[in-house]
Amino acid sequence: MHAVQYREVGQPPRVVDVDVPTPGPGQILLRVTAAGICHSDLTVMHWDAKTLPYQLPLTLGHEGAGVVEAVGENVNAVSVGDSVVVYGPWGCGTCHACSQGRENYCPRAARLGIMPPGLGRPGALAEYLLVDSERHVVPIGDLDPVKTVPLTDAGLTPYHAIKRSMSKLEPGSVAVVIGAGGLGHVGIQLLRLMSAATVVALDIREESRELALRSGAHHALPSDSKAVGLVRELTDGAGADVVFDFVGAQVTLDLAAQMAGLDSHINIIGIGGGSLPVSFDSLPYGTRVSTSYWGTRSELIELVELAKQGAIDVHVERYELEEGPEVYKRMEAGKIQGRAVLVPAQRS
Image 1: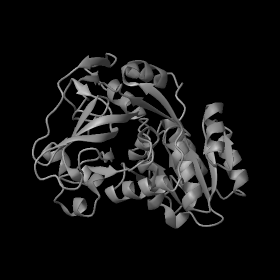
Image 2: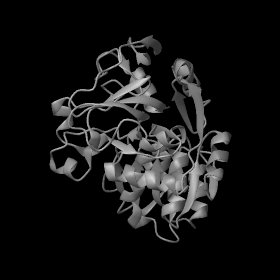
Image 3: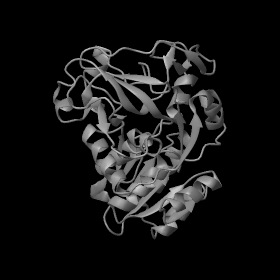
Image 4: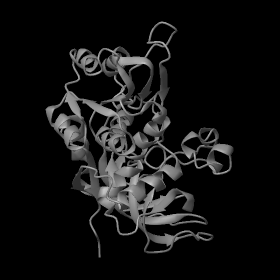
């Protein structure tokens, strides 16, 4: 089968031929129908050999959708022919966090060598994907897999972060979204759907600001030196109640710190390499700063239900699987709007 692999540190990914995996007991083999490309893949490919925690070659892709092709023994929740999406942050399945569906915060996964597809084990940028457990697939019925697959990360990650800050998203509140890309434009839709907050989007690119407005943002502003003053004007000087930074670079975190109000939340979601000093007097009193990682299994199920109701519309750019290396180049150059999704060719 064809797969998009990162094979050598510092070298671009390539399309290669690899063997089709065979499902063992409890495992599921998917014929991939759609696979999302995430900016975090670029981060992985920018790490040096000492930093990279994964063995190469690595089939990329941590957003996956597919049709069940075959199942191993003791798989009962899905059957051959079912259309599903894959829950990515795999955990041990037996600890307290996993028993609550919070496998994204499994404390044992790293110690046991359990890694997500595309981030340590073979991912979805291939014609077939092996899933370790029926816990990690969610049926999507007749939903379009190309439009639905970004929900597994680009939807799940902002959904999880927003739910953690719902206490601050009251009527009259202001939520700032920094970065209106693959995750950010979905986050804007979810904020409008889940809260009565005024949503202010910040992005350096005009086309992304336009996407933010189409996604429901009340305001879309350039993320430059004037942004802090403009947000302060919109809030009568009080500052934002919640800031969601989907970039995480030093410049955006600096903006987040300057525009946050008293007793606010700053959610660091992007992995742009920045840091935010936290001390008693470095931020407005009462500010809570937190990181966020993916989301829970139950939250992915909830997102699929929202998609079935037509409540979410992810902006996707569709490409063939073999175009994967070129898509990463386009992403690096900032030429992708929303989420890029690769679709394997259907072989007879």
